[in-house]
Length: 236
Ligand SMILES: [Zn+2]
Image 1 (cartoon, protein in one colour):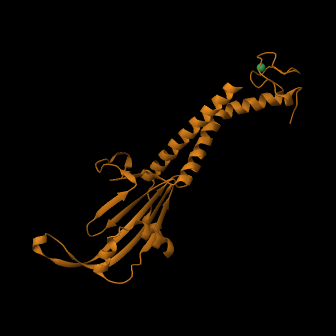
Image 2: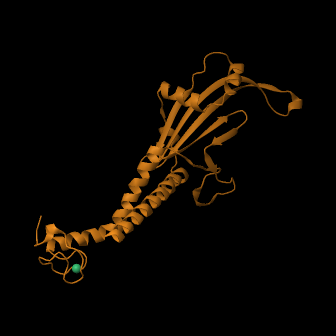
Image 3: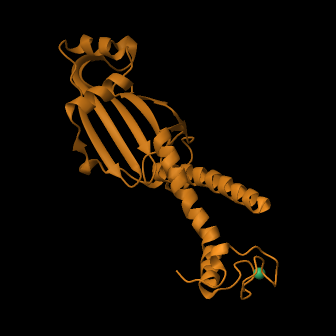
């Protein structure tokens, strides 16, 4: 009996580890192949947008933004949702006087500059990993946090340039998804045995070997213990 329990524990641990690996694999697959659709983006409530901005916008930005135009900074928020992927953006646009071209030329122009923060959340059935990015349109600089980035030169398998793979977990989502996939693996491994066991129980056979059971506490064929409830043959 103890050996059976140990085997079950090992099976359970294996399932949970595999479930966690599948969870990450699914989340990263969504990151790579799920394409957010800009045309289906919808506006975020202002409170959610403000929170996103406060959490993710670099502190130095407010000075730069105020230099362009003074006044309260009110970001616009939008969300794009596809299979296993949520992309939230909070954006501030200001008209700025920006130097452009080579510095020596000293040419100055008036431009609209965008500051945007992006939050990527991936995972299925629920979001389990996330990363964030910050970008300004004048420098075209994109800084990413909480993710590994594919090298720019990888273009095979429809992997986008500089594709991000988040490694920061949402623990609730991470655990729920891992258990979800672990349960599927467990069912695939144990399911057939469980069905056979139930069928043998229904037919009044030993669950271990399928030999008809009598009134003995042990199977007369293989010696496996026969549960009390099954002697003599009982149907539920
Ligand atoms: Zn038996």
